[in-house]
Length: 78
Image (tube, rainbow, N blue to C red; front, side, top):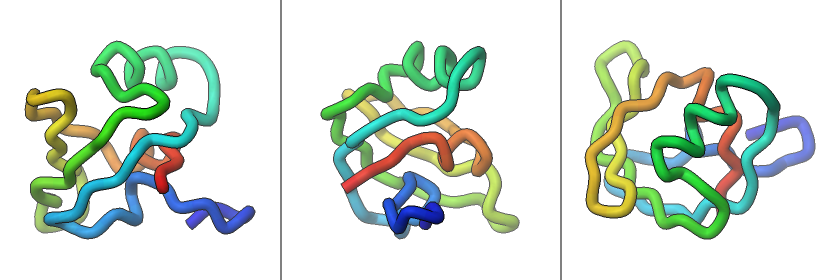
């Protein structure tokens, strides 16, 4: 959870889905996340988390993606 109490993609348990509410941050990381199709309103399913917690495997718009924990913290979900 962020300091404001908002839930991030990093907090979503394996086997659960969440809807993207907002992307925080700027620059290359935000652009990379958006280029992968993770945008406001998108449904994201958490498929698996690697043994040490990094990366996180997701299903987004029918595609399977991997996202690092630090990148997942930029994605606020509901």
